[in-house]
Image (tube, rainbow, N blue to C red):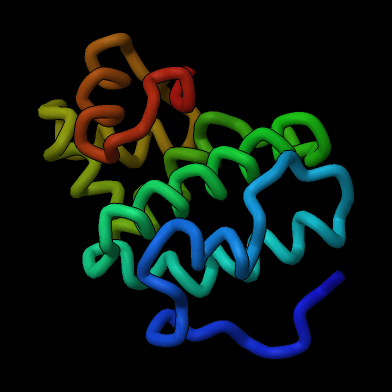
Length: 140
């Protein structure tokens, strides 16, 4: 059943048993259970640095359950490598020139890659995955 009030981190239990009474961690079977689970994870997500050990364990378990449901139920749109790279750059406040500097190529290398005139090399993918802390598979 969907909860009727917004959860606030300050009001969440500090111990694992108390957190389980709030939202029992179990596999997600439908959109309502998914919504309930994500409501709790969203309330907790902003405060990860302040978690108790029990809150951290509980949060990680809930995130795994959400990811498992996502893998089986959510159909993600096909997104090109260029679009993924553009998104990573935008989220980091980086420009094509910044991409060129990061990759260590010519001044216009970043713009050429973003336009589709040049492809990423294996070395580029390694640098980018390390810099953005993403899986290299995201850029292949």
